[in-house]
Length: 332
Image (cartoon, rainbow, N blue to C red; front, side, top):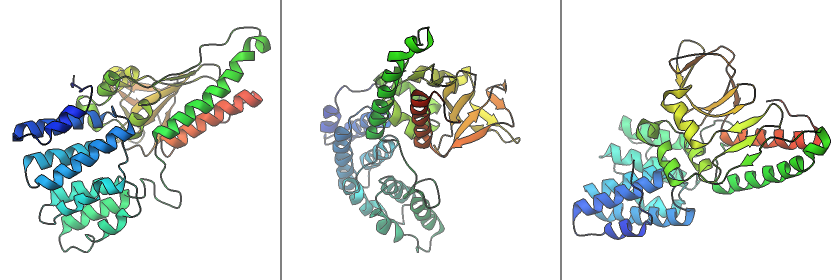
């Protein structure tokens, strides 16, 4: 279990401690907090800003590397404003491809179009690895989905608005359900934020490399959704169930053409269908009830229902609203 400091102020103070080990340890503690989204946005931005200052001031060095690594970990749950991190470009030397790659990736994760000019300068570098890093960052900057429609990402504001919208629809629906149908409805729940312990569990061990960042941001605001009487029933799983699936109690892979693909199951409906995300967050799959062997779901009827989590959540919100207002659930 990762130890999460209750307050980032102490490791922030140790970032400027006399001893190198203390500074590196402080950056590691902050990385743990940022990786699981344990800080409010304002706190996170303050921490990222301080880490960026440390990385620039102490580069090269182990403490600078640790600070840069912590900022990279933050991008799993936060989109840092460009002004906080643009000073890192001073570290992006073509002579140090690993650091340059990290810096350009952080700049791309801001989703700020102004970062394009900073990244573009490396596209003409004669070294293959430098051009490749710049190309990856340029591709990531506008979003993961190519085409005219930009990638949409889960934000705390989006999750809060989604919860308010669906809660209002469910309140109207459940208030008249028994009068309309003659029997009580099931328990409809829009859960509050996941706990620190749940967020840590979602990223512990190998799950750190598997868990989609949008799902982590979602769990920082909404830990569970249960709508048993909307259509055939819709459920967004709590963190403990997601972790259980991901660690071997359920589906971890899909295989439709002989090439297994890692997925994270995060939802289901009342008929046994599962919903899963790719680790990159670039596809939401619908997994019909099927054969599961060794954690691999083998069914040619697996389909992609959304290009990312936001689109799936939009569809789910529309399904709830459509059922409440008309009694008919939109197709899913």
